[in-house]
Image 1 (cartoon, rainbow, N blue to C red):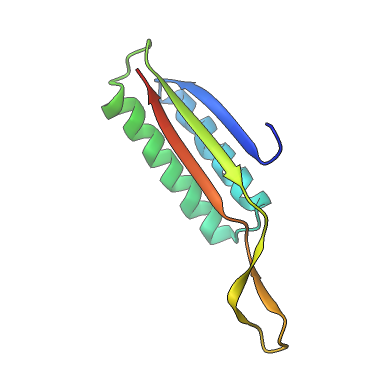
Image 2: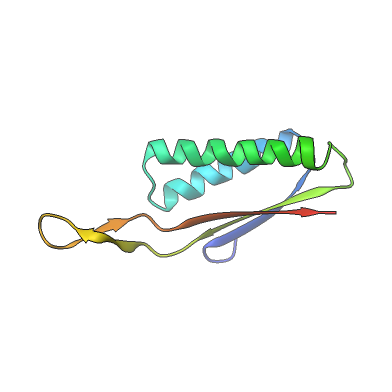
Length: 101
């Protein structure tokens, strides 16, 4: 992991899907997302990983899937809380997939 970015190259097996899901959940939690959003992010990453392995790469061991997570700093929302101070939202959380052919 370099700073707020981590990248993995995954084999085209369902076993590697668990690693992608766990990493997404951990990074989302560290970025400040609540438990419900962490679960949604983890589930979305798992589904994307399964689709990449099954449908994109057809379990071909010579094909890999690259998964990258990146966090940015927390920033204020467009509205303010009752106290007049900015209402802070979690950092932006980006997930990028790139299929290696």
